[in-house]
Figure 1 (cartoon, helix red, strand yellow):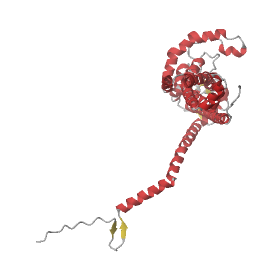
Figure 2 (figure 1 turned 60 degrees about the horizontal axis):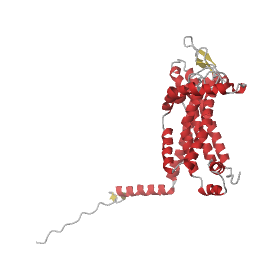
Figure 3 (figure 1 turned 45 degrees about the horizontal axis):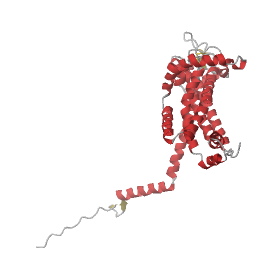
Figure 4 (figure 1 turned 30 degrees about the vertical axis):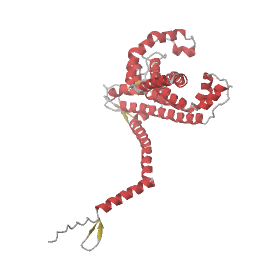
Length: 371
């Protein structure tokens, strides 16, 4: 008998026949169509443009949302405080024992008075001290690392700079409150106060030196926090300076200092300015470190650089708990107004930084100056 032949099974068609004889696409055909459409969409670049455009809008939407929420919450306080918020020094949430009072549609405790002048001056003053101290130290450290130290030692020092930049601010605040502040009050502040000339313009540097909590301590702690940011950025910028201009300047007889002053620093000038203003933004918004070493002095301006003071950020973090106890909610609205002022100050500083960097970046390298 002939052997039974094995009949192969037919492959499953990619289309399904209907009762009327029409052919409809099957699952394989649909999968290939989706894959082809996805490849065409990716090749066209529309998906990438849409994703990047949406990502670019996220910071703008987030910033607009934050400002809108702050403005909405602070509006009753803005109406109640008026321009006196920027000129008055008293900071009093009012008496919680009396009946609330309504003024101009804003419900608040009786006797509530909010003046942010000491907060604004403290924020600007401590940040100014930090930048004045940190920028020369940072640029000098970056020059030494790039121009003088051996590569291996420079890498080790750069590692320490990066580690210092990552230390939490509360650690700096605790160090300032327990060690650095008392050291300043015991050794540095009395020395400066005794030797400053007795002139009216310098009286801010004379007088009582306090106990280590004050404007000078906060400014120096902020400077220590800003130095790693400015120094590491300046180091990376100086490493990108071409070698030929520096070698040419040395061949013309310039010293190392003159090469750095006339070639390296002008070449990286716009980047150094940007790094400095980045450090300024860090100092303006620093909260915990300043709150721990400032003394949280509300309602008056310090009479000298050594006495306690406060900033906008430190006031918000130190007064928020007590503000929630205000049944009228007006204290929270006053803090929201202070936060809005801080946001505006930071935005103005960043816009000014962009303009300054753009102006400095358009200046030509001063080749030949001073030779």
